[in-house]
Length: 155
Image 1 (spheres, one colour):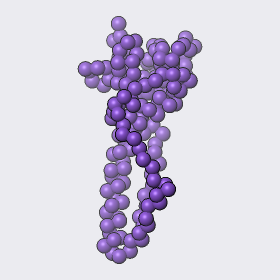
Image 2 (cartoon, one colour; image 1 turned 90 degrees about the vertical axis):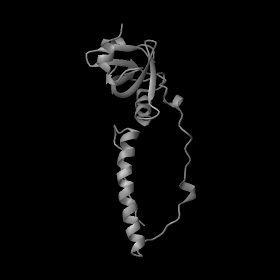
Image 3 (cartoon, helix red, strand yellow; image 1 turned 60 degrees about the vertical axis):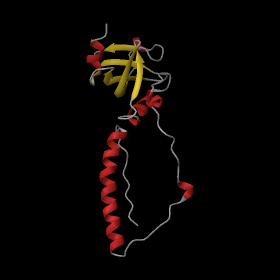
Image 4 (tube, one colour; image 1 turned 180 degrees about the vertical axis):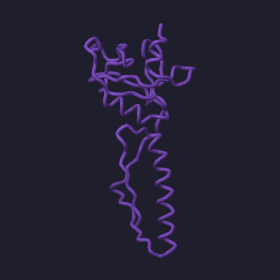
């Protein structure tokens, strides 16, 4: 039996992981075929008690709920990047959220979840618990941009 394990990086997105697993899976398939061809493969049936099922991912699953914790929203953004993508409404504008970073909540930002405060490091959004800095965003109809650049363009 040929088993390959790999850790998931702390800041890794699902797209990053997919790319890494594609390479690892290809290498594992070649190694397994070599074992089969050489008659050295040890076959092991899948343990049905360890199998899990995932529901189909829909676009609406990527909608950010700012009442959740900063940690949960950070994970959601990384899980749904690149598809279906995380989306949020900030200042009545729908925005693709490509990358966030947990940060200290400025004193003036200790407001209701979803409140966006401009700081020197960029826009910081209050969450149910904690805060997130918008690192990269994608406004509707535009390309990806730095969160601070997006915030400077708000009217």
